[in-house]
Length: 267
Image 1 (cartoon, one colour):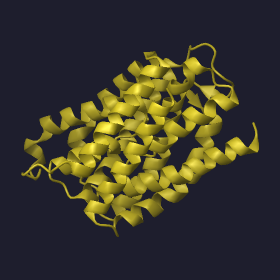
Image 2 (cartoon, one colour; image 1 turned 90 degrees about the horizontal axis):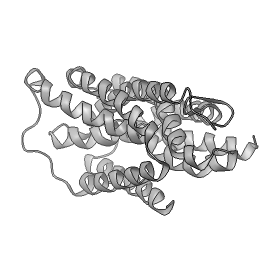
Image 3 (cartoon, helix red, strand yellow; image 1 turned 60 degrees about the vertical axis):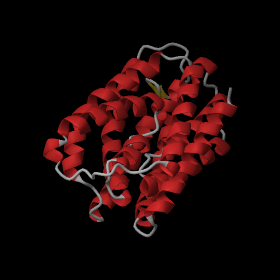
């Protein structure tokens, strides 16, 4: 493999790590569009392009989210009762999303990714919070579990990490932006574990896969991205503590809009 491709994967990990820590999005917003551009150059066939991009993204999020979660934990930005309530839905949703994503066509996955990011971008920037914050998590477990299932399903389906949905959802419920980012980053770790496992299992017997893949995970991109993303995720988490809620929401909206545009241009 040419050095230029390795450098592109490494650079992707830098940006993914910073965004994971700063916005709690798991880095998939950067990784999936980049891989959809680079993977054809290294011999990935068109029919497997998006599913390998998504599967590889989910696998890298595990390590990015580990570093990001640890930083947010140290800064006391993780609401653990919410994480425990979200967990059952996250697990089952992520497993189902990986299975469905493995069966969808390349264009269908790209279109779903683009439309999803477009709607989220509009909400994050212009949406309003719900008037009542979630304070009694014991009474909100069913509601949070449902949110977890939907989040796990869609996030695993498009490989963009749980923070992309959970961050806005927790803000909508009234959680402070910093704590919403920290909590969603932690949940993104859970989604990544079960989502990537689903892509590995569903791609185990797939044909016409390029060398150096395990299921639908492309190992050269995986190792290059996690190398730099883990180093830079703590930097992003530290940045989140120094910016206002409005700035964080605008940055998340811009990242979502840029990713949607990349998917629409690819048609």
